[in-house]
Length: 290
Image 1 (cartoon, helix red, strand yellow):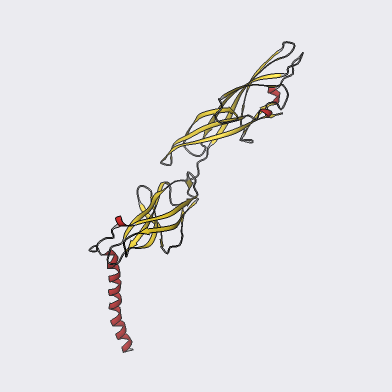
Image 2 (image 1 turned 90 degrees about the vertical axis):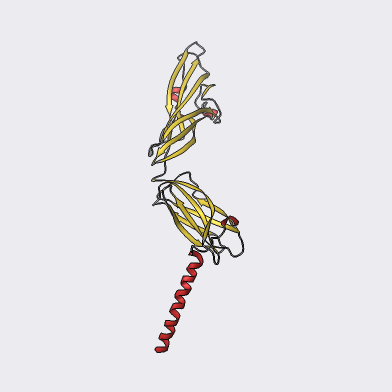
């Protein structure tokens, strides 16, 4: 028992000395810091999901691979940290030892909200030098909302129909139709308001004038919205109005394969975050209904 006690007593100071010496190697302010101007760490960094906005129920993943370092002899890349900065505070989300293998950082967003900047930092060590860090990438920016913004749009058509029968009878009728929630990406034109049967004679064609409009909004945010353009035809570059002549028989408008294009822009501030204008194009198929 006495021998054992002597060994313990002699060994404990040695252990304490080694621990303090180890800490001093990296934390002693008297030691020179690693010259990070001579260190370059690069990597292939991807993040998902790549949505414009995230919400607090989601999880972000950051993958790091193909890590390469140029540094003076003795400098070692000990670990890589994922750091978050929300403008008022900076904190380490996770730190992983570097072994040369790909890394994956999982980031639950439940405790984050607003505009958050993420960066990857390499933690460097060198014997007889203070620890240092270098930025690998600092351009990962995400906006986290309490819920994902929703955007709604309703397209309108202003329809004017004119025709003249062989007996001289004239037909003129105007009406308006809108897209419906039940068939969100279609605008239905009733055949009963489009085609006509003269009292006498026959009418083989119709002159159709179509005008366009829309309204848009965000039901779950305070973002503003404006309609920047509308088009009727077969591309978003067509005019906002259209005049055509079609046969006076059901199905003739369908055969034109027309579409309404609505371009919208959402902007403003919600949950203390001001977004860049977010532009959307909604396309509606113009169809006939009985």
